[in-house]
Length: 357
Image (cartoon, rainbow, N blue to C red; front, side, top):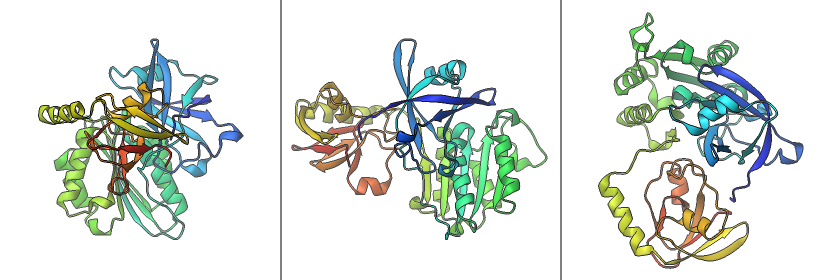
C-alpha cells in the first residue's frame, strides 16, 4: 500500500466536548470506493503544523452504512496535531487523508446472533461507536454491552449519541458509564477502569463471559492493559479479544540494546522492496526497513512509526526479520507473513517485502 493521500474538503466541524471535535469530510464520487471502510478502522491525517509535516491516526466514528467519512479528534496535552486541529480546522479547509485501514473489526452479517462487549476510555470510544452502530443495525439478533470510562460527565464524548442508541435498541444495548471524578449512587461506577474495577464490572455485569463472541478494548494504555489482563485471567481466548492502540510504551534498555545489535549486523545489507508494482533493491541503512525504503526515494506509507497503527504493513516474501515491537498486527496477520516495516530489521540475507499485498 503506497501512501496515497488525497486532499479532502472539510464539510463540517462538530464540537463534541470542550476537548474534542468531530471532523466530517466530503468524499468526491470518484473516490467513493477508495474511502470505503470497515467498522473500527481509522484514517491517517497529515497537516503542516508550525512548518512541519505531522501525521496522526484517527478512528472513524460512524458506521459504513452512514455514507460519510468522519473522525473525532480529542485534545492531548502537548499534542501538536490534536490541538492544531481543534483550534484551526474549519469547514472548507482541505486536509490530506489516507484511505482507511486497520484490523480492529470483525465481520458483521444480518444472520448473526452474537454477544459483543466493549471496554472504552476517553476518545477510545471513537472506533467502538462505529462497531456498536454497525452491529446493532446489521445484526438484529445481536446484543452489545459497553463499559465507558471518563473523568466526569462533561468529558463523555458522544454522550447524547450513545443515549439515543440505547433508546433505539432497547434491550440490545447495555451502557455503563464509569466516572473517575464524579460520584453517583452505585459505587461500582465511581472511579477509573483500573484492573480491580474492570474485574468487578466483568464479574457483576457480564457473568457469562464464555457467551461473548468478541471483546473490544480501546482507550488509555493502562486501562487497556488492565482490561486485557482481566479477560485473560478469566480464560477468554486471545482470539476473541480485539485491542486498538495508538500509543506504545518505550522499550526497556535490554530490548533496545538487543535491537541495536541486530541493526548493526544488518547495516548495508541489500533488501528488495515492492511498492506500486515495482521492485527495487535498496540498502538497509541500519535503522528499519521503512526508513531505508523512504531514504531510497520510495513513498512507503507510515503514520505512527511505533509499531501501533499498521499503516506501514507489508508482506515478508522471503528472508527473515525481527520486529522491535508489534501492537498493530493480529496473530493471523503475523502467521500469514505480514510485518510492520517501521519495526523490522533483516536477520538473514535475501529479505524481500511487498507493500502491495
